Length: 274
Ligand code: CAA
Image 1: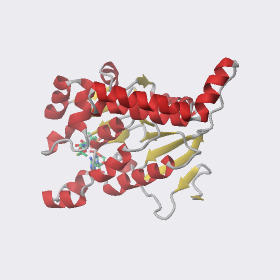
Image 2: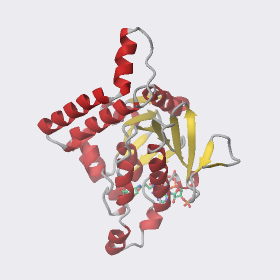
Image 3: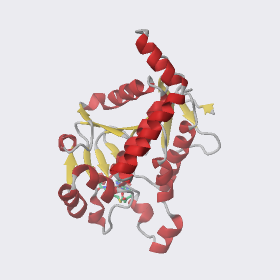
Image 4: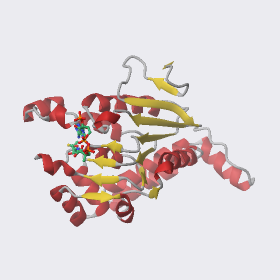
């Protein structure tokens, strides 16, 4: 890992130097920040940018000095979707061969909590990337949408599935079939985001929340994240058993002993992730 001149806390990944993201490894204790950095294209998600996010997340997931990860764009755009210019000339066979969503599958498997700090355009793949994250904090200017229908396609990175599960069928159909946008306050009412804050604060609020999570036992956080996500994938009965096994397993950790002992001793727990 080498630190580059643009800022003491900005680090490059080894081997492949990222061009389209900035990685701030300790934006707060135990908190990393990935910033999408293609501002002149409203952070349009080309294949290279997505690979850089994937590689960064694999590295951060394996790094014990990181317990929570914030993903942001900039004030104007979280991301205006997949890169249309990159896709425009492709055939179905090209798309199958490239299989760009393999990259997204890897991102989805990140075990550490992902918090999206979202502002401005959050469209298409941008909305889908935000929904892959575990929590979305939005600025009051954030706008969500799946406007792929306007360019003769449809969402392909989970938009028809995750959006529908969150906002319900009728609203999802409006957005996916009509290409309509959803402003931040409405997204809050529908549970798409957990908080809407003034634009000056959306990133700091996301980092603050990540810091709060980073104070907890990272093993318990990981197991809890995994269990919540199972509610999307399993029947209630199966998911309840899954949750129970994770719950019992946490009693094998030192963090469980530390957490409960600290409670009894009326002090703050110091979780080591063991
Ligand atoms: N792909 C490639 N380039 C994009 C882009 C995208 N999705 N969105 C914006 N850009 C580029 C523009 O081409 C423009 O670049 P140039 O200056 O080189 O022409 C630059 O970003 C600024 O964009 P605009 O001039 O269009 O900015 P605006 O403020 O007038 O409009 C916008 C903003 C309404 C978001 C408009 O850019 C827009 O509609 N973008 C496309 C949104 C979209 O359709 N997203 C879905 C993509 S498909 C997808 O995501 C599939 C999937 O499920 C994975």
